[in-house]
Length: 83
Image (cartoon, rainbow, N blue to C red):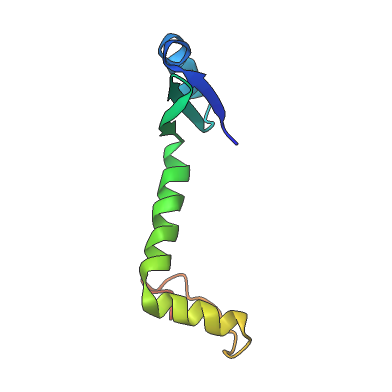
């Protein structure tokens, strides 16, 4: 669970909090209102959501988990990795 700061604490330490590279929550009257995270975490989250929203990708993942598909090495030179 990320650290939680009230509005005044967050405002007084925002630069330090942002430079820490950690996730944190800002609360107003003990109610969480903002989640802050490093850009890398945000990009990873968005990429995961894109994969989860792609029916073809999820079918391939489920098939691989069930052992129904054969392993194929990725081609890192190909835009679609040879898939």
